Length: 386
Image (cartoon, rainbow, N blue to C red; front, side, top):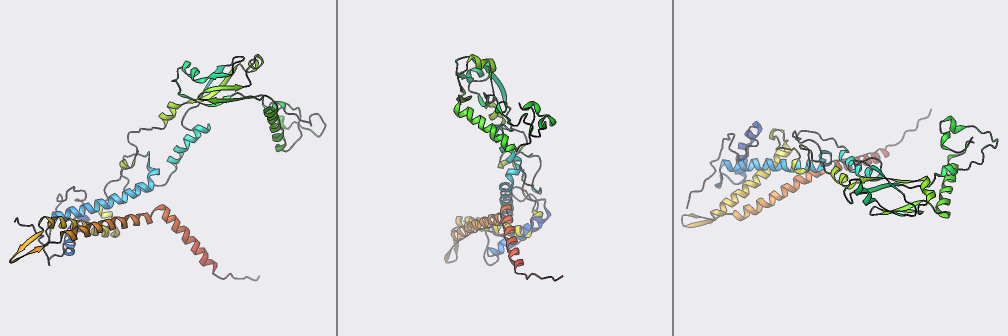
């Protein structure tokens, strides 16, 4: 049987002896890595039992534990701040940056609603018009779009300007010329051209609104009111146009957007922007900046890795011959214990990060405020006699 390498009891680290060298130049790392090797070997039973590991095994475990700690930490940070980070530059690492929550992504999302509502957004509304024809009620706006050079079915109608005469034109002011102390209020504000009245009494504005609404309801219910319906860009207008209608409204105007522009404006491809969680510019942590809480977790996790490695090594040499007998090694116990410890440590770390999330901290502050108010309410109020 081949000789099994045994831990000699001490080590002396030199940069370049870890698998990746992520932290080799860090002075705190160089100091702690040999201390960890001694700590891990003693926790595994040295010098009472032989430890079938070498210094490079301890070094690899220590580097891996730091990297996993950084991965969990920055994965939490990405989850916490991704809405504020998406679209930002990937040019510099964010490890020591304070991320101020912002509404940039929420505003970008709301632009889509602005486009649909006609109050802004990121898609231009275009204008078009077609000629009305007497006795023709149906108009194919897809055919119009093709004649204008647009792709078939690429337009989406947003607004049709097919409206009756404004109710204000039919507005009746019973106080005109009545000698009720009238004065040209609207003319004094430059609004006289927008009303048929000659002079005005200062009436509540809700009165004018009710009269206008009454006129519109009258036209809508009692008369053949102007209206339209549109399905798949097929426009049907009511009432059917007549020669009289055409003399007042020879063209029908409308506004539309291009579906292709909506899609194109929803896909942004900047060269150096954060587009997903994989290119958020977090790098490996700086070991010297990790506090004692983090380092304690790293020591425990690296020890679990060492325990797992030792279990696999001992699994190769399951039985060791000794004079007159054999010794069974405990590889199964080591591997199962290491697996359970690694799982528990990851869960503990994630729970710790979750407890320090913005949501949990605000919730805790709110509870503190409530308890403080309850405590202050127990303080007797003094009565001052003047």
